[in-house]
Length: 120
Image (tube, rainbow, N blue to C red; front, top):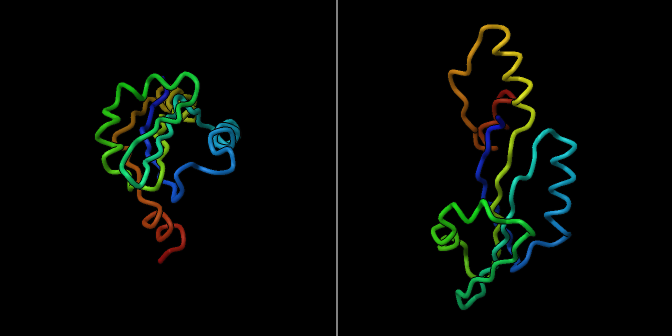
């Protein structure tokens, strides 16, 4: 079973540009994760919210979308994503076959990861 992560991305414009979801799906296929679900929301300056749904965006509806949308800044948009980490499936199998187990998995903020990689 793949592990699934819920991610919210914010865009400065009322709609993500450059065919964002299509590009995201191409990148996912190349880099070992899968886009399970995408829901894009736009929030007008007046606070009115428009759902710019991807076909099949049903799983995200199980998340409390209203709570997330409340934090979206008026005049911007956000993409709510469910991402499956496909690369972990093979890793988990290799780990199990070696008699190991995962004891901690934690996501680091990009700034902290950058400092670790650069040695700063």
